[in-house]
Image 1: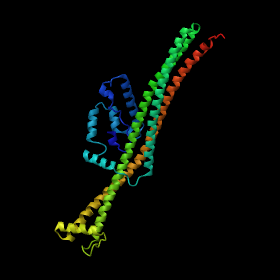
Image 2 (image 1 turned 180 degrees about the vertical axis):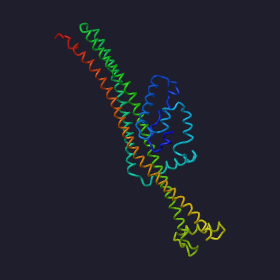
Image 3 (image 1 turned 90 degrees about the vertical axis):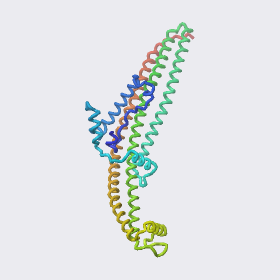
Image 4 (image 1 turned 30 degrees about the vertical axis):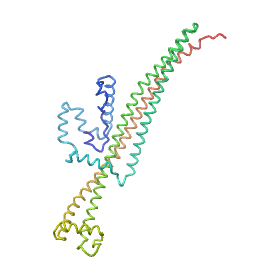
Length: 358
């Protein structure tokens, strides 16, 4: 409903309910509840940082109202953006038509925005793939350290003089193996989840750019239609009669001549009278279209200006989230290696005390 009330705003996507947990029955598991809690918290943070959405009456009612169903019913009955009255089928058909159309006079600013979004999402996808490879290698490394610890422990039973030292060294290897495994499990899940959340937010930004293109397409299509009607009106006005060879007085050639003759035969009425009536209808339609073209131009221009503002808001939010995501990942890695260094530093003196007779 926020997206409908504020179509030019990049409304953060709500946490999706199309998850396997809703099918398998795991939606009450602690892990799923924690992820759901994080997603809702992220959604509210994005809304709170948005200069327009943070002041939305619908959001205030959602946070403060004790009778949300009543408030929502009132909101749907009296929306802040009046309904145009178009049906769902008309909206779908318009969207499908525009989906296969291209803006004939693209704005370089919005082309750069789309290119930036493409590169950003491509980069996030690459980061996800790269981190998954790192995670797999960390899992293999953890297993290798575990195997090494077992081997060292077995060696300690054979070397009676240094059994205790080797056992302690084996314990450090096991601890480091566990650190690698825990870090892999605890860091990868939240990090990948954050990346997916940011990708969804970027898709919302892309949707606003697509809607802006639709507004411009509406203006261009109406302008073309107005030009066609104006040409038809001028053609009829220039004609003083039918005759004089292949090319009529209007100078539009054989096609216009044949069309006029066919219309005159079908109409069965005086040609001049029919032409005058048609010109009157065209005049009325042209006047209506001129108003519609002006309104479409104003709408497209206003939407473009809002889109530029929204891009700045999204970029600010994106940079903040990227800083937080990568910062948390770095902090986790630093803490893991700090603990590892503590374990290794403790075992070094013990290993140095081992005496080897030559």
